[in-house]
Amino acid sequence: MITRLAKADIRIGMFVEAVEGAELSFGKRRFLLESDGDLDAIQASTAEFVLINTAFGADTAKARIAAAKDGLKKSLSPEEARVKASEVVARSTRILKAELIAIVTGGAFDKTKIAPVIDEIVEADRTTSSLFFEVSRLKHKDETTFQHSLAVGTLMGKLGDALEMDKETVELLVLSGLIHDVGKLTIPQSILQKQGPLTQAERKLIQMHPKRGHQILKQYAAIPEEALDICLHHHEVLDGSGYPSRLSGSKIGPLVRVSTVCDVFEALTSARPYKHGWPVADALTWMFDRDHLFDRKLVTRLGGVI
Ligand SMILES: [Fe+2]
Image 1 (cartoon, rainbow, N blue to C red):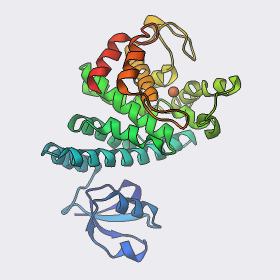
Image 2: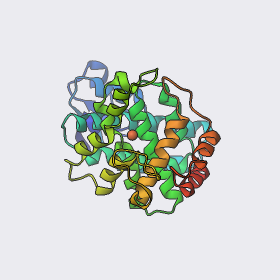
Image 3: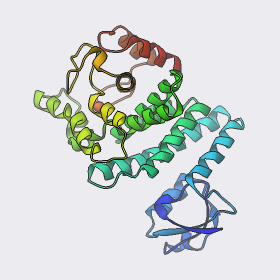
Image 4: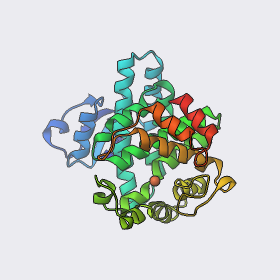
């Protein structure tokens, strides 16, 4: 069956019959869309719509994910798994970036666009072990907030899974990780990426990101209360020295604790313009030794899933 889709909805695995109104190189070609390069070229073209043939390729993101799932389960070599994970990271980052920028600039929150990212993270993480490392490896690029969000979402899903949380909660954790730092997009890049020490005023500004993110996200009815809570409180720590509300102990709920542990671990282990990433073991030990800040049980479980 031939279906006409907006170009933003085109996915790897679909069979392209025609790219309407695009440059000649795409306009007359029929092909199975297999590479990120071709997908990027379509997205960057002047076309608005693409005709796909569902008899020869996937028709929806779900179908593509199911196909990818099958493919992954059928014995990928470590190198193939790494490449696959790398593709998931690149694609997810692109979607996440577009969606988070749309949210911050007052656009709609389109759950249907983020849902495939969540599906892919949850699935890729169960079938390959390299997704988190792929995200970390790509961190040197100038997209720190998006890559960090993706890595934290991935880690939160992994940890939720290890804690035997149900599928809905695991997906909620991934979503919360993807959007937890959206408030950072309102902070000037020059401060976020500053190489030297921050002034007090700059630190105060950065510390406003949970409240700013929460203010932005609470306008969207589709965002669950737990995800709002994680956005607002992911920098709270057990002894009450965190921000913005200085919550302590039992006032910090279990899902927020998952976010805090994953957020700090990810920040410690990833390279930033001003620092090297710590080795995993060093980061876990550092956190384990600070049980006045972090839930030790969660740090231990996190060590088991990395
Ligand atoms: Fe944050």
